[in-house]
Image (cartoon, rainbow, N blue to C red; front, side, top):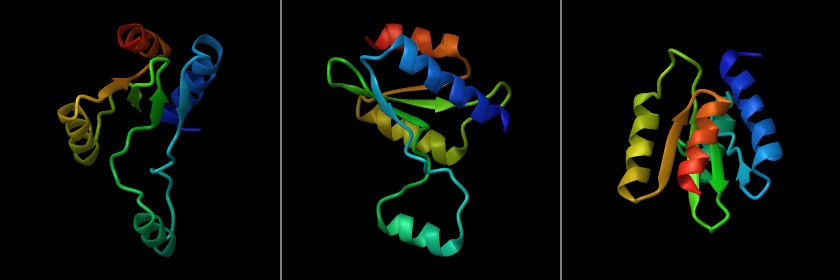
Length: 109
């Protein structure tokens, strides 16, 4: 299991335990697939750069978490998507740890 997946799984476990009032899901956009599957998924609305977790907060607003291990950074495509979210006043955070998630959710809720 790669470092990003390890952090991702730990964050999911944390959210389930510590923030049960937050509904969240992983859009699974970044999985490696063959050309045919990629073409089919693009036609179905999959777009590059979507963050790792989508959160529906208790007040009905939503936010996005981009999970990155230490010393790894958002790609240009991810940064462009983050900028689009920010332009629309949608919450987006890059997180590297459970502590980052906790701090972000304290700010958002």
